Image (cartoon, rainbow, N blue to C red):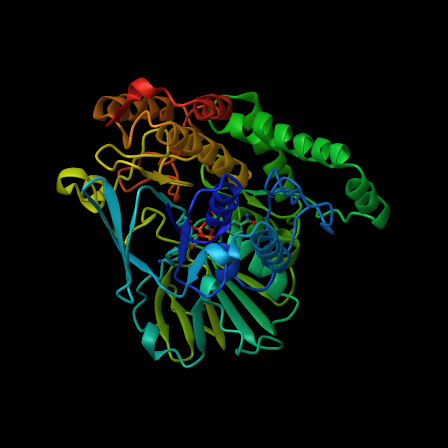
Amino acid sequence: MAVIGAGMAGILAGAKLRERGVDCVIFEKADRVGGTWRENTYPGLACDVPAHWYTYSFARNPEWDTLLAAGPDIQAYFERVARDYGVLPLVRFGDEVVSLRYVDGGWEVATASGHRDRFDVVISAAGVLHHPNIPKFEGAESFKGAMFHSARWDHSTPLDGRRIGVIGTGSTAAQLTAALVPRAERFDLFQRTAQWVLPRPNLAYTDEEKARYRADPAALEALVQQYRSKTIDGYATAVLDYDSPQLAEIERLCRENLETVRDPDLRRRLTPDYRAACKRLVISSEFYGAIQQPNANLVTAPIARIEPEGVRTADGILHELDVLVLATGFHTDRFIRPAKVIGRGGADLDAVWGDHPVAYLSVTVPDFPNFFMLGGPNSPVGNFSLIETCEWQLGYILQLLEGMRRGDYREASATHEAMDRFEDERRRAAERTVWVTGCKSWYLDRHGVPASWTFTYARFVEEMTAPRMEDFETR
Ligand code: NAP
């Protein structure tokens, strides 16, 4: 088997395939595991999902210092799991997969270095938040200071006492604001769209608590389940129905948080004109405090262009800067692309998807036999643990592989009928979600259709529990 990518999902696949004695190669273009946690090293990087839940079910971690873990600690966790579960020797580092072709009942994998190999099954674990979105601002090349995307942090650039600008107001920009305001001489946040911000104080765990979780795995699991059910009953239910009491409660908490902004004009400019949770909620107990500091400045006039000295906004003001960070997000419709994936009968995944990637139950695409995805199109996304999501998806894929191991079939792909039925139903369910209530976000594709799972999380779990083989074409 081939696994593409050694981030959170690729490490998971490697660990579980190795446990089952499946011969497996993991292709990783970089020289370290970790995926998004390897690539993002910006100041303030953290995970706003409770740390104990953001772990593999088979490798819970009693050692987290705080409710929300810092990025470097999460990267260290993934590196440790990859080492402890024997994943590292499976990884072929430093070579990018450029094409996958289904020929004579197997996948031919080609890499950038010219390496070629053949596999029975491919699992794409290529990630979603992976290809930086770098907007084309007029004059960007003329900027005399340092300019880089948040996921390509230039650690040689000094920050202390400098004039720093951040473009964007997503989860990344909120974390950057809290981390950089105390260090900058002046800090400008360029906001195109205001965000709803849900507070979540980052509680610290005491040594006694850590010792208890270390000694008592059941207590640790109970803590994980407590965070899990709170999120699934709250957020994951709220987003599915824009009239739900759960959504009303999230909105109330966000509004209450916004009230902590003292200056009425700043508060007005920070007030979104769409429903809470329509975009991904920003979770932060520090953002509003930081943006109210005397050296912080919220810029709401649109960016006109970038000049050698800084950013010129449409109101004519030049915001002079030494450092400009693009916290402008990612191209989230790429998945395994730009790798070329050619399935049965010459089907080209790029053409099949275009600007509306879909996957039957988020895992597989008709005409691409034995090609499966973790965190692929239509996966549940949001303010909860994608690790758990990928574990469910892998469990589903492993059951399909079991049929191959038993000799029931050599290849399996979803039928077109099953794909169309799933997609019709998914789109209908999307009509009641908060994502379509009038905002722009990466949760929507270019046609304004939610790209994610639009059913309950319970249904996702149920679907992943056992494949319905009548929805598969097997040979
Ligand atoms: P994002 O949520 O996509 O936000 C991008 C920001 O850049 C938005 O404010 C957007 O404005 C702005 N922007 C984009 N192009 C622009 C342009 N041409 N001019 C002005 N502004 C522009 O990106 P992100 O903050 O990097 O977060 C991406 C995802 O990463 C999150 O949704 C989350 O899933 C994940 N993440 C998670 C955590 C965590 O703690 N778990 C932390 C960071 C990131 P508009 O809103 O107007 O489009």
